[in-house]
Amino acid sequence: ASMFVDDKKIKAKLESLQEEKVEDLKGIEGNWLILGDMSGSMSLAIEKARELAGFLSRVIKGNVYLVFFNERPILFDVSGRSLEEIQMQTSGIVAYGSTSIGCGLKLIMDRNIMVNGIAICSDGGENIAPRFCSVYREYEKKFGISPNVYLLHIEGQDFDSLTALAYDAGIPYERLEMTEVDYYGLPNLTRILRAGRYFLIDEIMNSKLLTIDEVLKGGE
Image (tube, rainbow, N blue to C red; front, top):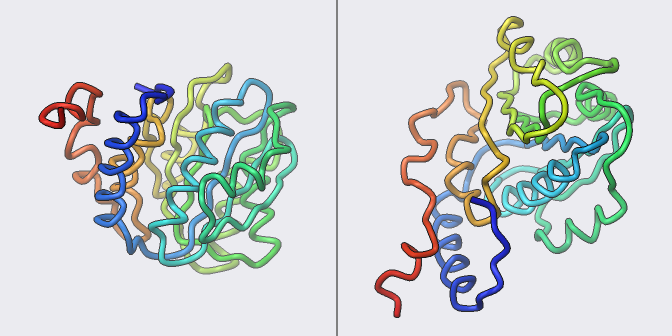
């Protein structure tokens, strides 16, 4: 479960374990887009999108773009940046407004940015156009590619309407639960993120997230 790690010994062990997994994951292909929901009540999605961006920027071979959205999108190129740098870069982002997941994808389409994978940190609710599935079809036509899409689901006030719509549209799409995954659990979650043609579903959570007791076991 997500927690604030303030014990120096525990934090050092978690960071050491994470570094080992970072080395295993380095080399994920392609350019990636992270869409972070900054609509009303989505403060947790903002935090998780920053954490994911900070982690992916360390293991992605290509570029990493972070777009926060409500009814309007705000784009940040976070390629090669640390979590701390991303937190500073996006410090003005706060949760308010309506929700158009599609506006974030439309922004990078209009700027001729091609990505191979899309990770959406959101509760999956949309209440204003442009809708994600509609923009996705436009994106496919413009660039001739069909990026893999992952909803990293964050519990929120809105019902997840995106998942059913994406499946019905035949978009290469998976929903993963993100609410209780903290920064130290991201290596396990990230095992599923690949820019190839096929999802590597069997890789996700091959090893369970470590508890604090398991981290400390044998390290006294």
